[in-house]
Length: 349
View 1 (cartoon, rainbow, N blue to C red):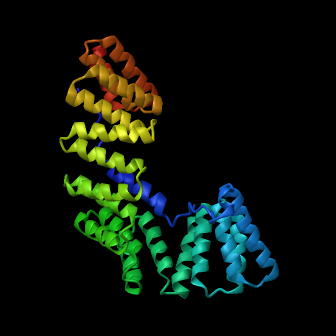
View 2 (view 1 turned 60 degrees about the vertical axis):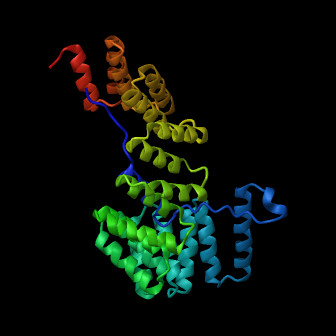
């Protein structure tokens, strides 16, 4: 009998962080001011900010910096074509400003045109070799392509210009991690937090890196991340997984419960609580309920009905088990474990 355990989502987090850090296409900045206007909806405040810049552009039509500013505001509202027009005009007026090309790269990424983004970033560092933002974004682009040596080289170039740049160390940390050098990955991430004590994502990655090593320092890094973002479900999940994989199932369950208070539909938390009930507590009825909650949270989670099938087998209810295996295969016809279990109960070799 084989079981399906959800382990620490180490490489899943890499994919997540790449999406998140691929030069932050959709900046989550609410343009709220202090005072009387703070009750306005965010969208209206953003629109008034664009209107304000547009009014200034009408007065100063040759002010290319204003065009670049408006392009950034337009991107926040996913108006990438409008942003492209503005930043193109700004570059036409002054093609020597490196930061305009980083904005253009953001626009191209928003338009799903990575080739254009790469060209813009290469142009940025060509005309402005000391542009740290351009070097970091080009490093991120290379990391996205799996060119880790070039990623590290570009980040190092940025650090020669600004030795205190936390994001450059963070980028290096990811590149080292994906290259399999966890020692250097940890060192770079730690340096990132030294340069910026509020670097939430660096603490998260350190928590994950030390979790992979089954090192208790993981708890400290998750705690630091939690202090910065008390309602972060990913912190709770990472910490719970650490406890689960290091012989502390009761503490893991406690943390999963806290996570589910923040997000009752966090399917993996329900699933992992079910796994603990099944594998460690041998409480199969309780496990079935957790797996049922997981399916309710994520109807496409094939591994949850599969695990329910194992629970029913343990309860000597083979007919219910077969139903669950069939359900899992309905959700995922390539699910080998469910197919094998189903054949076993059907007596098929």
